[in-house]
Image 1 (spheres, rainbow, N blue to C red):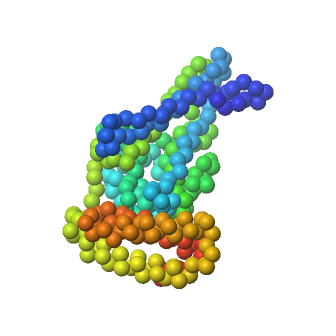
Image 2: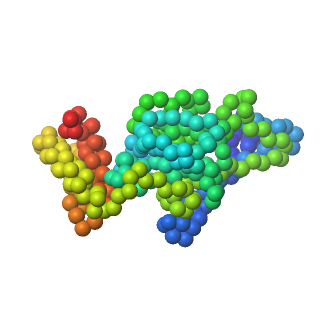
Image 3: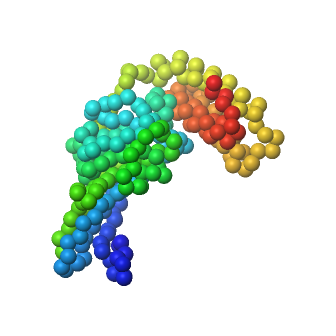
Length: 268
């Protein structure tokens, strides 16, 4: 409930989260919010902003693209008025090194999010502010669905009236019948040359970082070092180059954190 001046409430709000599907490939989540005007005499007008933080695997700097029409991967923040694309896809690093993607559908044949007046991919600390205009890059990204963005387009409920909004999210394009988009046809075998090049570069970068490590690193830094060691260990398994590429991408993401903490750049 939203408290009114002097007590009571000006809106009753109910939230429902539901998991659909029985397997990983068929599953998706719906998040529904219902607003009810409890007044017996007065209309009420309001706006509704739903915001989600995004973190894919260990990467808090997600990149995104739209699907149908399909755009290039980008970390640049952006907003859309009444999105016309089928879905937004968000991942940690560009394929084929990505760990996994999440999808937010708007025009899916299975289920579509209630169409917002404004949809924003932007800075997590700012997407919750009314009037926020996204700009810049993808450090700590999030999304926002905005319904009734201003007084001229506010949601109005008559006494006793209700309205519901639902958003969906999934890690399986198949579950929402979202077209799979592949920039290039590739197989685990064809991935090996690129993988070997990236592994050599990552190994050199890790050596550079290790040379700059303090003699007595903090607990947080030690945890990050352990994560890189674990991921780099997984990245050296050529029996499954797809898995190894994913582990390599995760190792690189943690290396970014370590470099930022040390104030160095071993990726030059």
